[in-house]
Image (cartoon, rainbow, N blue to C red; front, side, top):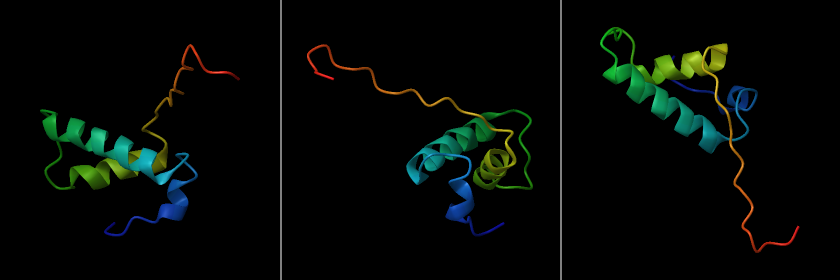
Length: 70
C-alpha cells in the first residue's frame, strides 16, 4: 500500500494527529525489534496493524489544573 486513505483512519482514531503519532511510535518499535520483517516497511506495517485492529491505544485526557473553574 503506497497511499494511506485518511477517511478510513478516522474509524480507528479520533484525529489524524493521533494516528500519525501512534503509527510512528509503533514503527520505531518495529525497527528496534530483533525479529523485524525486512520485506515490508515499518511505517506501513504499523499502519496496517492500526487499521486491522491489532494496534490498540489508550487516549489519556489532560488533568484539570487546580485553579480552573468547570
